[in-house]
Length: 50
Image 1 (tube, rainbow, N blue to C red):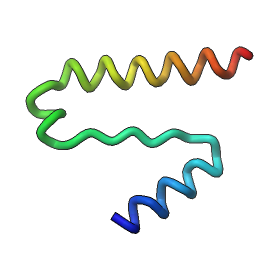
Image 2 (image 1 turned 60 degrees about the vertical axis):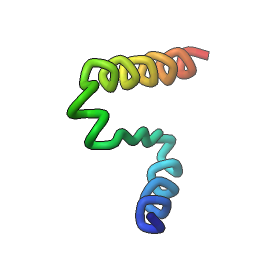
Image 3 (image 1 turned 90 degrees about the horizontal axis):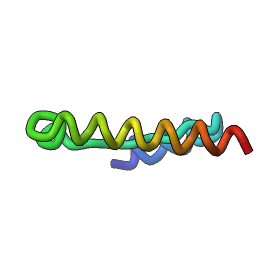
């Protein structure tokens, strides 16, 4: 967990956003995971336009 936090902080320095999904969610709700990824990408793109 500490390694994940360290890695996340490094990525944030490059203005990257980390979104995590459990293997269970990916295996049982793949479409929902894709919808969430799409939502986050669209939000980030709209923030860039401002």
